[in-house]
Length: 130
Image 1 (cartoon, rainbow, N blue to C red):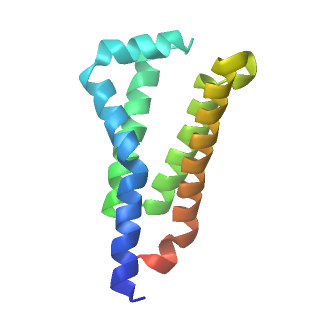
Image 2 (image 1 turned 180 degrees about the vertical axis):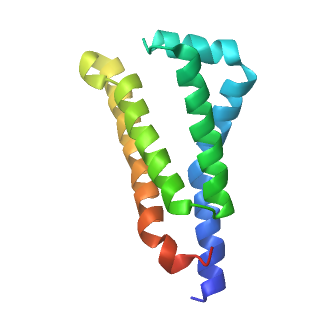
């Protein structure tokens, strides 16, 4: 494989990896009151601050990762955000039956996303010139 092919493929992978975060952040930004309600439903303190922080991390770190600026730092921020959000919002151990199964499945999906960010951290230097 050529370096150009790796670069293009790695860029596409980064775009696909963060698409959900850009969508989520933009949705929260466009529906601020709905985002506040989500933060309150999770029992988070200072819902407006939590919402603003969530939007900032989701959108800014995602755009940075796509642009190839501070890629590793952005991947670490998004991985950390995903870990925290998963532990806060998908506490499958507090559910039972089908609800527990759904929450556990979401946790595993988020673990896959976290693994993607870890791969970005590990492979960025070798696959990208930015």
